[in-house]
Length: 78
Image 1 (spheres, rainbow, N blue to C red):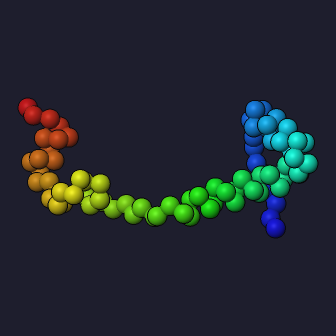
Image 2 (tube, rainbow, N blue to C red):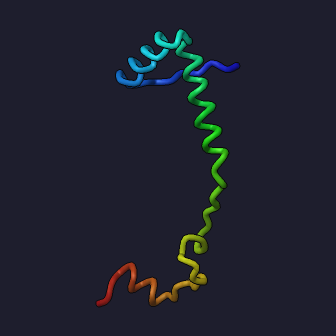
Image 3 (cartoon, rainbow, N blue to C red):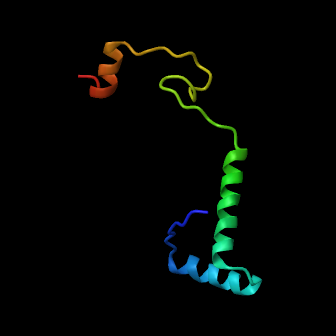
């Protein structure tokens, strides 16, 4: 087991303290349980790969911009 520090705001700290008292469990155990839940939820989600130019384009094939189109997009029409 590794030691780590966690900073909680006043509301989080007080809520954790109340739950620990009510359940009779140490705060550290509750924190570890929360971390395990976050890890399990994140690992249950499929991984989303991000790429430059392909992906969230609505299924349209990738077509690179021409130099003129890029210039107009950045600089606007003159």
